[in-house]
Amino acid sequence: MSYDSTELEQRIRESLGAAGLLQALDEYKSQFLEFPDGFFVELVLKDGSKQLEVERIAREFRESLGKQGVELDVLVRSDWTIQEIEGPKPAVSVSGGLRAAWAYSATLASGNRTTDVEVDVTQLAILEIKRKANEDIAHPVDETVAVKELVKKFLKFELSLGGESYWDPIQSRELELNESALSYLIGQAAVGKS
Image (cartoon, rainbow, N blue to C red; front, top):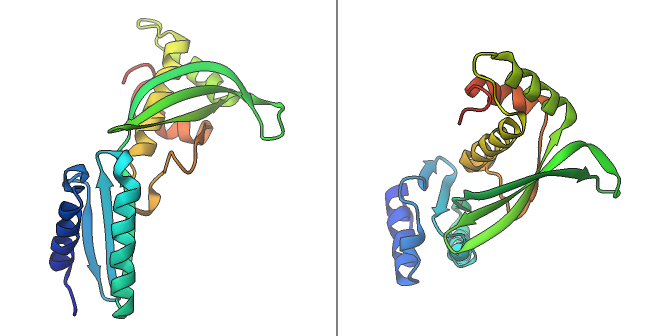
């Protein structure tokens, strides 16, 4: 039995509905794409606590289509929001020593699921943030607030990526905000303004 992307989407939605999981699916961010050699499906969930169940259904579809010689690449991910950011505290390296960075802890939520991540802001990035914060004499910005706002903006950017660029905060709980990432963020908005 061969499918097109519309039929595959319908079958996946039916399976999710039968399992009571359809309400967890973000209709606007999920995508069903057809390519000459198969399909790419990205299922974005509003509730990360349902991810394992949805991954099981996706795996069943991948295996079923694989037996028919049809390739199905499925990415199941959750949509995360930032609940809280705390810090700074000294950043610790893998070996246990101190790094030339400040660590900020963030709590992320996706429906009923939460996770904690850490963003290490390098000293060179902090110096640049302080320099930018003090540039506008007419509208001075508190440096501590400016750093925290850029950490928030950086997390929002990382969480906004989809497809193969997706950052999974469950699998990878640490990020680094360095000078390169800072240059990109500063180009997007003025320091201290969200």
